[in-house]
Image 1: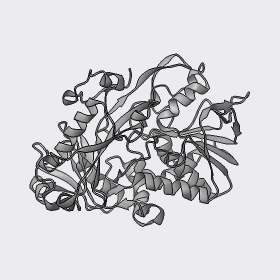
Image 2: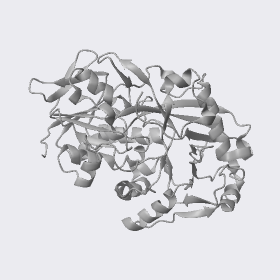
Image 3: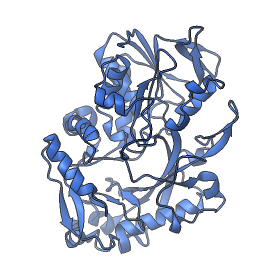
Image 4: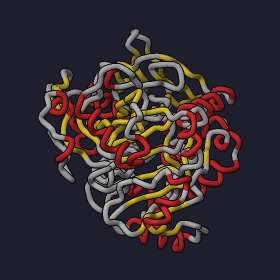
Length: 445
């Protein structure tokens, strides 16, 4: 049913929360308070990053249709275009992703220059930067010249600032738990300082911390808990820096996603100062006993070593894995290039990697927007509209069904490359070998 709304508290100023705050600010008529544990952009948030891929090649029609509206904003809306770089993107993938993606463009009526390049073209273009890349026995690689990357932290900061400028109240605070009144409705939030903040509606957009917030609020009420709908998962990014002639050689390179098992990673092109950022294309859990419930849950580590960018000592597993990815992407060109910083990025993953954007069915006035599953950031210009439509009861059926609380684990994965390879504890104890990772892993301890 449509939900009347006069005031809204949003917990989490990441991608989904910030976009929703801005959408309501532009729309007007709702008093919005955006709460996060640090000033924006929060360096612990998944949305805070050097840069992230912005692409619209999705075999999945639902997400491609969303990007049909998002990509023009990335290219033409000053709020987003200032941070977007259309450098193109390569994808080395032995699956049928490329064929399905090209067909999806055609089915959606979206003009696209996406095509396959021969292995030889890849190796000889871009000043030979990919001359010794590891693409195995692939004879062709998907190339889309009309996508690229965005400066993630700067774009997120701009969206939050625009929301604040339009009247959203930004509050730096730690939320202890949700306030549930005697009628079972969510009436606001309790901060760790003891302060209570009340609102007509509450949106929980806390990313990888969403499940623990629900469990802490109602330890005995299992219906309130996320259960197996959400899993806190970590992934690793790293940076290096090119200088001189090598920087010039790499100046025009596209984003490069290499899905081959011996590489499994992404290179995010290059910044003006020579910085190149990479992701290892895998994720992992962090199972611990969650004291409020006594249950074993995957939680975000409190130690900043496993949350924010660091140039200090990092677990050997990830150091070795990063080196393997970097060498696989650029081959001999980077053999002597030192990785200078690492970061664990934590996101909420769902079983199908679809988003979880839904009213909470067991708590009136509480809404959830999370489940980015390591591919949600690129939707920053449009995701707020979908969340607002959900809160107000206008979300189109196809989206409501895909993002529903009780969707279940049916259908294909919306982001099939980020698979769970193990648990952080096992990684830190040296129980996993980065050279022999499993290709799939079930959700669970």
